[in-house]
Every structure is written in structure tokens, then in C-alpha cells.
Image (tube, rainbow, N blue to C red; front, top):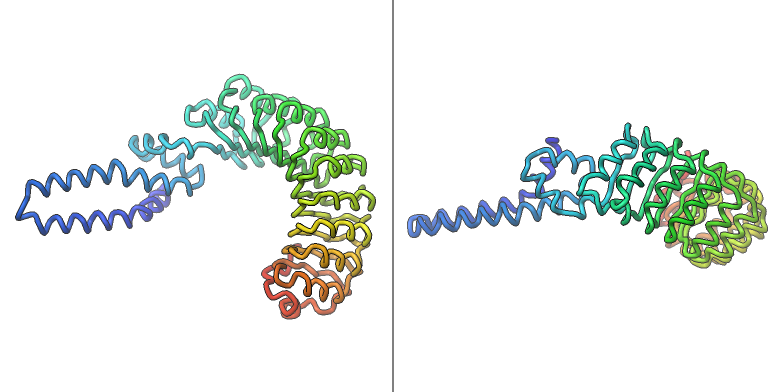
Length: 387
């Protein structure tokens, strides 16, 4: 608590110095108009307490973690009233990694200050179950009407039943993340697309029980989808991915990390995503130089992860270098078929943009020391993506 108050005091210091200076100037004139000075000082004090301190508190509070902000409520009744009067401070509920999260969430959304919440973070929160999400729908429906972002990452006790309850209460949801949940099935995805029509950012990483049916639902209902993470969704095949590539043309970020089931034919169709900026193909064992050459048509790419794409050679990387000249991040980790030749082409095309390049494990590249890479890419800041 003391550290929080110290942070507030520092932000107030520049204003208090100004106040002290003004008071000293007034003391010099005290002999001439003592009564007027007292009135002026009282007025200055009133303005300081009524206007300046609340303004500074508002600035400081927006930069504090929510848990520190809640602690500040306990300092004094005046501070409580001041902070509560700013609705913008109470648009996020953060219960990440906290215990008893289900009951805490219900209690928080029952408070008036959270009646316009826009974001709920429950990443790896403990004790959050379907029954809590069902209770929210019954008791806190009005408080969820403005919710735009819901993070259920790592909440492994949530099932399709919980997804049905919470999504039916969040009509304008835009961001939905449910990383590493093996209880969610295609039925849960059906509830999501039926209840939430505005989703643009979807993280299904590690949801091992969803199939191509889920991707077809997503493709048909979210044509304006901008970000999709399918990491380790092991039941997916070319058919499901192709639905996404054909119908979600606004995708800017696509993560298909550790999915060895897709073939080169599916990877070639990634070229349809003209807005694509971030692409993670780590572990794509079936992608060839031909497939990567097609992806090179995604000229807006700034980040490309080719880690362990073992069929790739210089030809594929050279195609990327020539097509994706805005590239900032590139991982070639573990690719033994690439040589110095591809780095030389990359240097000619992307030397002014690449800041992260991982060539570790690329035994065909002989000039990959820190100094040699800096000579080719002077703006490099990161040389290692994988530990």
C-alpha cells in the first residue's frame, strides 16, 4: 500500500511545488493585505483539493494495475469517492491466476462500478466453473451487455455448458480466448457463433476436441475475423483450414503452430490472405518451397515463424525475401536445408526492417555469428527466439 501511495505522491509533487511557490509569494505580501491573503490561500487550498488532486489522481490511476487500484479504495472515504467517480477506471476485471475466481467475479459484477465492464481477464484463474458462468447470466446480465473481451485461457473446468451461458449474455463480444481447454467441443463453438456475432479475435489454442466443424462455423459466421490461433488443435484437417482461408479474407494474424496434419495444398491457399501480417507455421512438416512461394504473395507479412519446417530450402526463403519486403521477424530455427545464400537475399530485400532473426540450428548457414548477422542486418536486436 505504501508503494502505491508513494507513486501517487510523486505524480502530485510537481503540482505541490507550484502550490508552495504560490504560497511563498503570498506570504511576502502578508503585511499589506493580511485578510485578503488568508482568503486567497483558503481559495487556493479549496481549488487544490477540489480540482487539482482529483485530476492528477485520475491520470495516475489509469496507469496502476487493477489490484493496486482496488487497494487505493481502502485508503480513505474521500479517495474511494474520487476513484469511484471515474467510470473509465472500472472497465476491466482482472482475476488472472487468482483463487476463488468464480465467486470473486460474481461479487465484482454485482457492484455498481462494474456495470459497464468491457474486459474480463480470467487467465489461469482457479475455481471458475460452469456454475459461476450460469450464475452471471442470472444475476449480472445487465453488467455484461458491454463486454467486448473475455479471456478464459487455462480455465479447464469450463465446458460447452459454461460457454453457452456466458456467450448468451455478451452480445457485442469481439475478443474470445479459451486457450488449452480440452472440454470444449464443436457444440461450444456453435453456442459462440450463435450468440456473439461480432467476434474478430479468436484464440482456440490447445482446444484438442474441436474439429473441422468448428472451423466451418467460424468461417461462415465471422467473415471479418482478424486474428485466429489454432495451435495444437490436433483434429483439424485441410478441409477446415480451407474454409477459413476462403471466407475470412480480413485475417491479419494466423497461428497454426504444431499442426502437422495440414498438407502443402492447404498452405498454398494462405496466399489468399492479402491482409496477413503475422503467420506462425512452427512445426509445419508438410510445407514445401512451393507452398512457401505461394505465401510470399502475402506482401504485408511482418512476422513469419518457420521453425522446424524441415522441407524448406533456400528457394522458399528467397521467395519470401523477394515478396515480403516489410518482414521484421523471421525464425528459421532448426531448418537444415537453408544456406548463406538465402540470408544474402534477405539482406538485400529486408536489411532495413528485420529486427529478429533466429538462424540457430541451421547447419547449412555458416555465417551466423552475432557479428556476421549484424553485418547483414544492421537493425537486428534479437538473435534467438527459442531457448
